[in-house]
Amino acid sequence: MPAKQQYGSVWARQAAEESRPPARAGGPSRQQIVRAALEILDAGGLDALSMRALGTRLGMGATSIYWYVANKNELLDLALDEVFGEIAVPGSALIDWREAVSVFAHSLRRALLRHPWSLHILGRRPNIGPRSMAVTERTYTLFDDAGFHADEIDDAVTTVMAYVIGIASAEAGWLETLSAGELSAAEWQAQHEPAIRSALRDLPRLRAHYDRKGPSIDPRTGQEERFDYGLGCMLDGLAARL
Amino acid sequence: MPAKQQYGSVWARQAAEESRPPARAGGPSRQQIVRAALEILDAGGLDALSMRALGTRLGMGATSIYWYVANKNELLDLALDEVFGEIAVPGSALIDWREAVSVFAHSLRRALLRHPWSLHILGRRPNIGPRSMAVTERTYTLFDDAGFHADEIDDAVTTVMAYVIGIASAEAGWLETLSAGELSAAEWQAQHEPAIRSALRDLPRLRAHYDRKGPSIDPRTGQEERFDYGLGCMLDGLAARL
DNA sequence: GAGCTTTGTCGTACACTGTGCGAGTGACCT
DNA sequence: AGGTCACTCGCACAGTGTACGACAAAGCTC
Image (tube, rainbow over all chains, first blue to last red; front, side, top):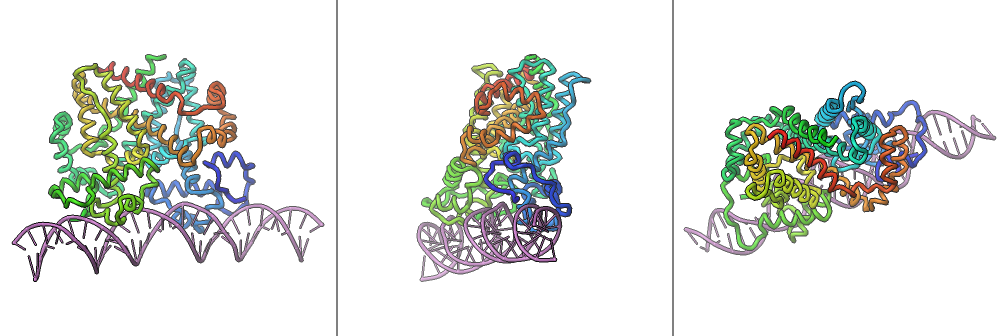
């Protein structure tokens, strides 16, 4: 049975169709296709992933992929869920919830930064793959076991995820502009120095900050500390609601 | 002088070239082009904005646009900065900083949700337009006047922005999947009910939450409250560091 | 074995994208 | 009158996702 269009996402289609038989022995499985897609995405970002490129990497025609996947969006859904398979959520048994949430947040951030393209998909498609939902489940459990009120667990989980995704999105965007232009941070900085200087002319507070940091602000320095600062704020605020 | 390629962003190019002369009276200004782009983007999202579509809306050829703008990315940079022109940041004179930051956060969220496409640009291009930097300046001022330590102002601003952008990204993504599929929330829900049910089979905590909310969870209900919950957490955590 | 269904592959084609190039047009200045 | 500048635009190119229909080959039933 070919992969039919008409469903909003892979997950809906998978549930609607009877589970696919084990398939013939020889051909590439959908797993392999997704893995190849991940390699292309990691190497060259979202723009590098075309069906033709993926086909040649798999040693098959571009349109053959459509046997396994209804369209490119389904492929991206699968790739995104793969990223969430890399995320570790500690159980609440051994360490206290603050520590556990912090470990989870760092794990999520690192996974997203390993695959910067994932953030673009995250903002465009509903994230309801099985691995993603498993992560959410474990995070729910964390807050539940910590004793959060049932009505607030959802809010708390959403809050943490939003913060991590927001931070990661900014960091990944920076990574991608550099790699897209094949620039070092210093080169980019040099290219934009005049523009920034002239924009700062009427912005005294920012200018002071800029001058204080010196002319060589690579936004990537201190990223981890900045992340921890905001995460600490979140956790303090959450703790106060416990 | 035509718009040359070779610069990483509009802002760098604008600063490098001498300021453009007032131009001939008749033709459309770049302002008008950007405004037309915004209309297309608001109506149909990022995918709807093609240079040809923009050209016909302006009553001109597609390639004529390249006289005013070096490439599509520059156009998107300008559009994004336009969105940041809609954001209000209250001064710190009249109300206390918590209230002021909250007003800013709500203003930012609403602007991003009015233009859901802006979040995709935000994740891809450095956000250094003049209006955006003016917003950042005012937010810096807010925290500065509140008495935050100079080293932490940057962290605090980043934290708030990351949270708002993270939340808005999720909300906008949901908006866009609905409008892209031309579905109501109920229709989408119906389409994915089986998939979600089967995914929840092994996820008791999520299943409990799902059942408690009833089968009709429109993620859009209570969005404002959820936003306020996390924002409250942030502000509490920030206040503790003051 | 023959014949049929299922699984899978692929070449071609279509509509559409961003944009480089070079010719053309009209207004303004000298 | 002639030249320069500010613009406009048609054409073309390489590349995109994917619909379609013709093929092939494996497995099942008789």
